[in-house]
Image 1 (cartoon, one colour):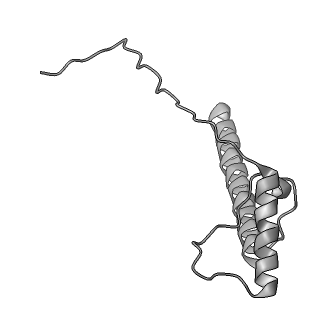
Image 2: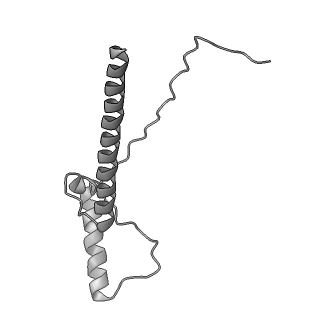
Length: 107
């Protein structure tokens, strides 16, 4: 009914990658044509929606500094306060244990 395999190592899942062909010149040409059609008023509004995410567009933002928001500042402040309180609590516990152990040694 149930088979228990103690020393069974499962086979890794296969990765089937089908490479795609990307032509940057054709994409740039299509963008230019679309922009020219829009400027001339010949743009057809019945075209399907196309996202603005381009190949490599995430790489340019990889090392840039993220602008700090008010929410980020408050979260960092709360985290720092929490860290300081934990450190103080640990010092108090360590002091209690240290000084109480000395009382037992003198008996």
